[in-house]
Image (cartoon, rainbow, N blue to C red; front, top):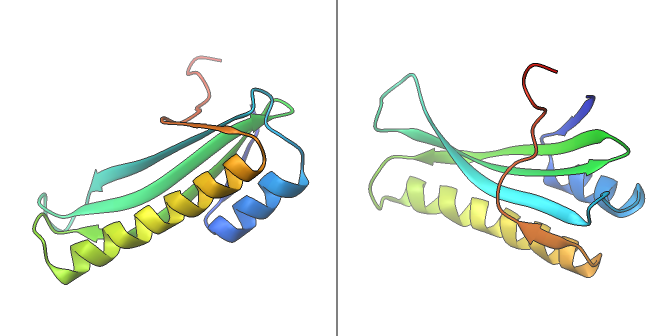
Length: 111
């Protein structure tokens, strides 16, 4: 299966608006935390949005910053950025009559 990837939420939203609705009218939207190589306590926070159209997975992976595991200004800014992106994507999806659900569409392994 072909995947189209975006790192900019504006470009992803434009694709969602202009290229026609997803096959199942669902936008999958989630935050992903991954450990960094710098320290196991620091996690990268990424907003991931996916949908399927014409047999292709359309995917946004937007890095938002690092979560240092405490309530410092860096962690707060990271979560504020991620929450803002998720809010904007949810609003766009709702404006287009789409359902927003958690999770990520991925190609099944072994195909």
